[in-house]
Image 1 (cartoon, one colour):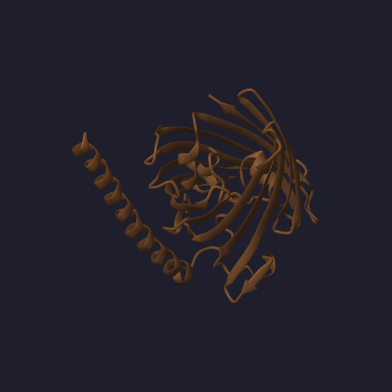
Image 2 (cartoon, rainbow, N blue to C red; image 1 turned 90 degrees about the horizontal axis):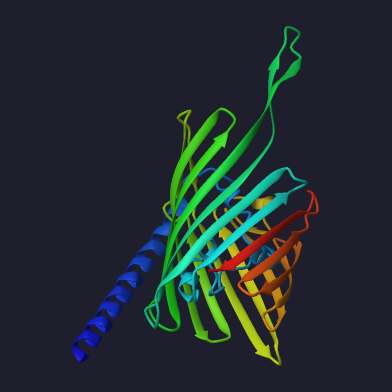
Length: 331
């Protein structure tokens, strides 16, 4: 028994050492690529609308969340803390039904104990209509030939593993397909995540998204690169007398030179903030409020046996509000 225990410890130590070296190298590569790659501004914007009623009601701040199958999309390092198989379905109508946003994910734990791990698979879809294809008549006047639709899809395949009670890491591979009128595109990208919880009530998360500079290759021969994005987050939680409270705070850093389209910018680097507060009673009734890049978000949740229903609303000063509902199934 002692021999097998020592083998497991050595294996875990080897994996931890390998992941540390890999993460260190990947982080260096991330900042080099982010600073030097000539990518397309907003090329990956369709992937940034978020997923799930709870995260979106919290202003999109979910980098340091644990025990949520939605972590496969936000930060795969949070997956190992799920206690059983989970599935989430979300539907949203954004900006006055201009866009339909759907998300479906399933995850399950693989191991338990100190070396616990989990797998997740997710499907992300953003689509709508209202794209007018026009032409010119003999008098150079424009006329509508047809009204077309568009859709973007992304499949996430996620894995997360805990290396200790405080540290877990994860990776997500995503396959992208875009269909825009008479063009289509394929892409493949990698996200890395880390989660560190020095205390039961305190966690820090990091997600390096599109770390390989995701390439979108179009049927017309055109190519676009999604520049890497770094997201940092923290969470604090407390319970007492049947009530619970949690505070989430994220910062999103891009290197696309967004300037006025971001909250804060320094030369080519931009920073956006996400903030959320959640209060619950006996983990049955939830109330949430947040700020998503300065826009107000609100939401509520209700847990009934193995089901959790989450509602969220995102205010926008220039476009119509976004409303969404998501349902979590504990399988």
